[in-house]
Length: 355
Ligand code: DAH
Image (cartoon, rainbow, N blue to C red; front, side, top):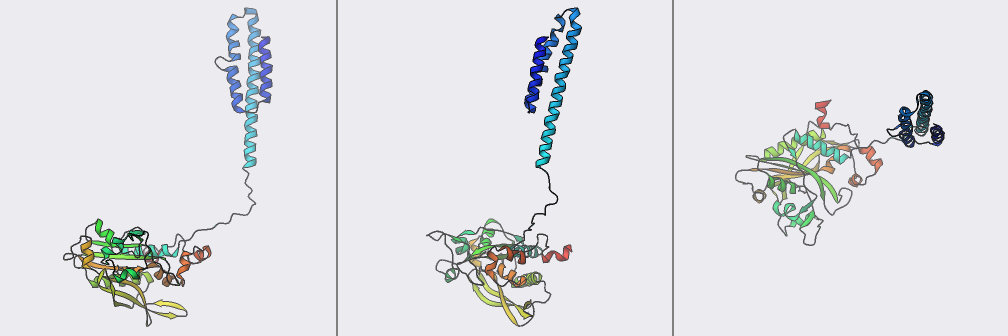
């Protein structure tokens, strides 16, 4: 019994100094575990003589209680300390001023692409995409623009290899080729995306955006092309009246080809679309050349249709009164917070439906 009293003092001492829950639990096992020191003392009870047993048992119970109380109070003490420390460190000072909050804006080009896509989807066009790095065949040859064709020089192409087999696409027209090669007619798609030409001034940037349109089916004619473009331009500029003219032009991949101008006037420094006697060119179009259809395994005696290519940046500049194209791509936050759109802005063409 004197041994166990010594052990008790030793452990009380240890527990006093200890500051760690794990080692306290370890002590608990050492004392009260299956083979713990105190547990073993209890096992000795049976071999103690009748007279001594009562005292032995009560001393042992006393020691047991003393050690257990010490363990419980020590654990409580450490836990309280930890909680207080945590509270101290994680204290929130509600009197501090709030942090500056900056909301992102949607770039006008993304906004215009969304608007264009939703307007065309209303009349059954789906959206296709193609890569910025194209091969020379899709960008030119398949589009009836063979080597040495003067149209190739007009495109100021960025070539990516010496053999001139890879390039940055100069227009979105190669998506026509990709779409028709992978599917079967009819086709009714638009393809918005980035395009590249070595050109830079107030109205030209080396990277710019176009949207391609392609509608191939049986008996499609120029009347359909005209109706489609008329609908699109009115919806996009949100006007009821539109003056539109088709000017004969030339593109290797269409026959006949045309450029489309829309009528406008300037009133109080603002551009008004659909009125006045000035003309603004906004897109190129035409009936897809039979050679293009043959190149993509579509039989031109059965299927025909129209295509068009529109400059997206130009449309955005006109609609939202932005006069320098280069600002689009300078990533100036002040410019973006002025001309950008809030994420919850609904494209104008949805307005009738949701507001
Ligand atoms: N790809 C032409 C360009 O970049 C634009 C164009 C004209 C596209 C006529 C067409 C089209 O699909 O039919 O200048």
